[in-house]
Image (spheres, rainbow, N blue to C red):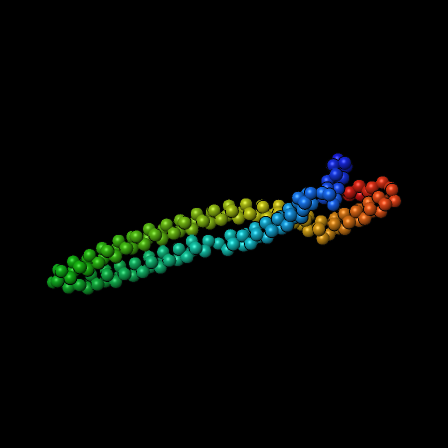
Length: 181
């Protein structure tokens, strides 16, 4: 249980006309800051839960490039098979085209593998981030409930009642009512 003298001194600084500006607004500023941080983290959590949009788009693009390279290689291979054996120059050009298409297919396959690895790493990082944010949101939600309960609930009404009773007691010369009673 806090020391009554300290509690009274703190209460007198906050409610006194002679109290410092900072002492008077510290609690409301902390309350507003907690509310804002809570709402920001809820918004950020929604962004994290939505998933790795850019990474998924990267995988889709790499997959389209791979499919395109595969179709180009198939077309070049088909042309090579249909090529006239009596025309070695034409066949050499088609063989070079098939080799180039195979190289393009290999590069597309590597890019697809990299995009998938990036997506997986992003998912792991987002899972860790999501767990941390959920923990922080739990703590802030509890604090937010307490803050709202104080400023708009029975705690505020009780504090106002105690203040009114203390003013009446002070004017009649009786003992002060301690906070929380």
